[in-house]
Length: 140
View 1 (tube, rainbow, N blue to C red):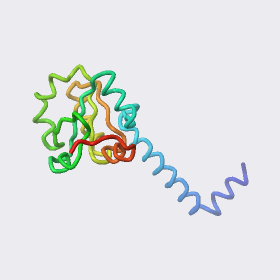
View 2 (cartoon, rainbow, N blue to C red):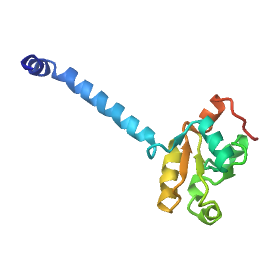
View 3 (cartoon, rainbow, N blue to C red):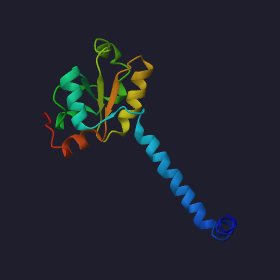
View 4 (spheres, one colour):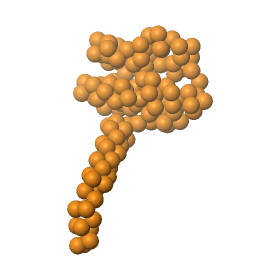
């Protein structure tokens, strides 16, 4: 244990760099959890859509939506998500999968919907990019 203390004192810069890198890695993992267990792979999203009739909400802008979206997805751009809460009300008891381009903005949208009482909300991990990489169909 004494040698560990000496190592830390003599190599404080190396130890500091390690701790910063470890903290940033931990922070990234926590951020990627997106609500703990609410991130779906394209395959898991497909199962949820088929088995539980999940509603897919695409929060990208209309131009991006028109370039290609998941089959059956509803377009509700992120900026208008609060305004469209009445349109979502009829789907409150069904699972909702939120989709964006990369999966990052979906986390914020999911949290917003959860605060409004939508408890069965999920995000597509990696967004439309992950859906594409998994060779899943897009509607244009």
